[in-house]
Amino acid sequence: MRVLDCEIPDKLYYSKEHEWVMIEGKEAVVGITDYAQRQLHEIVYVEVQKVGANIEQSQTIGTVESVKAVSDIFAPVSGKISKVNEELAENPELLNQDPYCKGWLARINLKDFNKDLRELMTTQQYAEYIKGLEE
Amino acid sequence: MSKPLKKTHLYEFHKQRAKMTEFADFEMPIWYKGIIPEHKAVRNSVGMFDITHMGRALIIGAKSEAFLNYVTTNDVAALTPLGAHYSNMCNEHGGIKDDFVLSRLEEEKFLIVYNATNRTKDYEWLVKNAKPFNVKVEDVSDNIAMFAVQGPNAQKTLQKIADLDLDKIERFKCSWTKLAGLEGFVSRTGYTGEDGFEVFIWNTPLANPVNAVRVWKAILEAGEEFGIEPCGLGARDTLRLEAGMCLYGNDIDETTSPLEAGLGFVVKLKKDAFIGKEALTKQKTEGIKRKRVGLTMLEKGIPRSHYEVWKNGEKIGHVTSGTFSPVLEQGIAMAYVSVQYATEGNKVEVRVRDKLTEAQIVKFPFYDPAKYGYGRQK
Image (cartoon, rainbow over all chains, first blue to last red; front, side):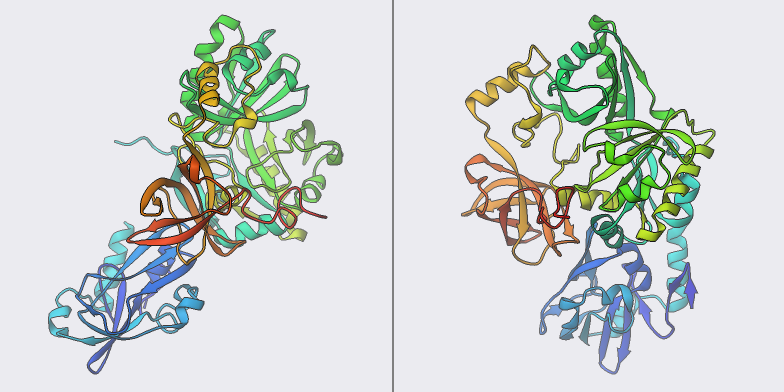
């Protein structure tokens, strides 16, 4: 669905810090939302923790730098990083151009997704959430 | 309740096309297309900024030259009518009250254009110090619209709507001319490092923005063939930083002196008494302890204001502004460092969050002046 000109795909989960989660079996693919990339604008560097790092939900998993500012990316789920998107080092603009596909950040081996879910939102809930932020 | 934000004549235009931000009590565009494309339009062709938010005052009277020589650091006697220069005002301790461009309109009439953030402070400072000189200080900020047309194609763009042959206006000169049929004033100055003009539409109160909008649109239309972009405050900041120009409140303020800031070229210690002269003379004799330098990052990472600068395990200074340079495609910054380290080519470290990141001290401007800026090879 589209809200405030932002794409919010179905079947993903969303965090309050504007990360998305796509579940693939025991793993999750994570990234930042269209709303987040529009707020950040013109991303020039992306840094994500290394493969093998254990991360807890809501902890910093990396940083993005735009021309204007630096922002932390918070892990939307807990687990172990199994893969990071290497292409972002060379092409950080993928986060702006294609946040849900080519701009993915990391794959995470899930620890306890049922627990993570308590802090996550559905597409509909996230749509309401960002509408609330703009009011 | 907070005060409602001030608007410029072009507010409706900006609001429809740009992301807006609050700056110095004004609601201003931060970008239209984006900081990087707007920045590149100015470096490679032409861009236009609404800078109506800046402060403007006229100084009129028989002793206006003497007054300005007393209250500013540069040599006002050297300005001939329709000449302009960059200058500073200091407090008694030699700290910078503001930096600005001063134009001599007539023998006894000057125009000063200062920072938006200092509008009230500067006006009050001028009025207070003007009393013994019996000169008139008139705040004309709200009665003039002001745009900056900047870039290698700025002259070609503006010429299409100007009556006067702009070739006749050299850098740091100004003149009256009709613009799109209206009375205007242009000054070959700017805040980007590029050739370009600052355009003043006189007698244009906010309540009646028609003339300002007409000139703005005429310039955009004239620049269309050159790919002109309206530019926001985001690109204004990256452009001035690449050019090595200070931003008041970041790189200079009342705790920094022009000598520390590398602005000694606008401090004329040989002229008669002026505010801050004693302190600055003393500082010059004793030598400065810290100095503003340029830094380019040798690793990934963007230095930002307040980041620490280190050398050999010792903190030697801090960043005052930093950004990603769209031309160099790397992080650049201005920083104050202890003077013993302030040597070009010196390697230092910038603490980018938790990590010490390698950087090098470089001279201003950051770009190659043979390729970019007003002095570029044609």
